Structures are given as C-alpha cells and as structure tokens.
Image: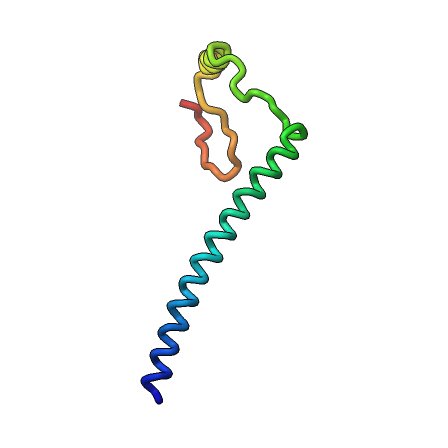
Length: 86
C-alpha cells in the first residue's frame, strides 16, 4: 500500500509540474498579448516628444556652463563643505 501511494504521489507531482509549466507559458503569452494590445489602443494618448533635441547645442551649453562655473556649487545639505572654496 505505501508503495502504491508513493508512486501515485510521484505521478501526481510530475503531472502537477507539467501543468504548472503549461499554465505559466499560457499566462506569459496572455501578459505579452495584453501589453501589445494596450499599447496599440493607448499609443495616441502617450506623449511622443524627442528626448534628444540637438546634441551639439547641448554639448555647447554644458561647456559654457563649465567655463562660467569653475568650482562646484554647494548643493547638498548633507555634504560637509569647507568655508574656503578651492
């Protein structure tokens, strides 16, 4: 009797493992399809602005800022700064 129970339990676990793999595969497919469908529905509501405006102008502005501000500014209240700026 215990041998039959252990074989039945082993078969039940392997069938459950197969079912879990199948369920996870189906759920991942459903999740991907939901993302694609929601993207196609809400594509027109999302902002479509370019984050990279003009890289040459951006570099020029950074270099001008670095030229005007030779020393770092004391921005953080948690950082210890000496009274004398180097």
